[in-house]
Length: 153
Length: 153
DNA sequence: ACTGAAAGGGTTCCAGG
DNA sequence: CCTGGAACCCTTTCAGT
Image 1 (tube, rainbow over the protein chains, first blue to last red):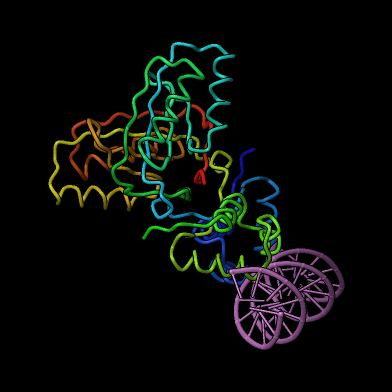
Image 2 (cartoon, rainbow over the protein chains, first blue to last red):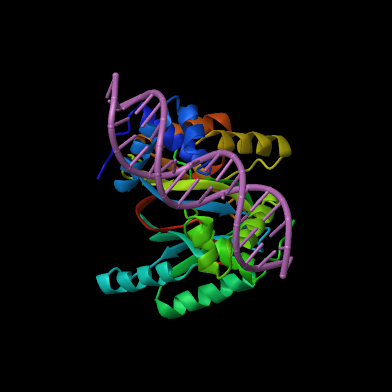
C-alpha cells in the first residue's frame, strides 16, 4: 500500500501536480530524463494508484459558487448504523467537497461549497432532517487565501 | 469576471472535472457533440480562466502523508501589515493546502497536510514564531470520508 | 534501465455548409 | 455555430544497447 518514490519518481509527481497537461517530452525534460523511462514510471504509479484521477481546477467564483462554509459537527450517536447513514449522506451530496472524521471534542468537519447562503441553508436543513446531530457550527469563508491539492513532496 | 455557461459548456466542465485525461472525441461523445465545437468551447473557457490548471490527484497516504489537521486561528492583530505578513507565510508553506479568512469569532481556518504529528508541530512552531496569533486550535483528522475538488455544477 | 525509432491515435486548424 | 478532413504532434510500443 505504501510507496517509496525515488528521486526521479518524486520529480515526476511534482511536475504532474504542477501541470498535467504537458507532453511527455516536456515533463521528461523538466525532470532531466527522456520519454520512455518517464512513461514507464508514470504507468507503474498509475497502476499502483499513486497517481489517481486527472482533473481540471475551475474558477468557482466565476461560475457563481460564492459561498464556502466549514461546518463543525458534534454528535451523540456513535453506533455503526448511524455512522453509515451519515457517511452515505455526505458522499451523496455534491456540495460537500470534503468530509473528515476528527479526533477529540468535535466529531466531523465538512467543507461545503454552494452558490449562496440560502443554498447552504437548504443543504443544512436536508442534512439534519436525514441524520440526528447534537450541534452544528458553520464557519463562513470571506476570502480564499490559498487553495491547492498539491502534496508538499 | 463571471461566466454563464450554457448547457453544453456545463456538460463539458462536468466531464473535464470527472476525467480530464480523455480524448476530445470521448468528451465530445459524452456531451453529445463533436470535436471542433467542444474544442472551441474549451479553448474559450481556458482563455477566460474558467478552466484553470490541469492536475493529477495523488494518493496522500501511500506517499506517507498520514496527518491532516484543520487549524482554527484567532488573532487580535487586524492591521494591514500583520495580515500581509500572515498571508505571505501561509502562501509560502507548501504544507498549507487551504487557507480561508472567516466571518465571525474565528478569524482563519487552515488545512495542513504533513507526514506526521511531529511535522505538524514543526510547522506550528515556525508559524507562531513568524506571526503573533491569539489562539490556535488544531483538529486532527482520523479519516478522510470524502475529498473532491469538483464543483457541484 | 535507457535510447531511438516507428505506428497509431489525438489535437489543432481550416474550408465549407 | 457545426461537420469533416488534413496536417502535424504526441503517446505508446518495441527492438537494441
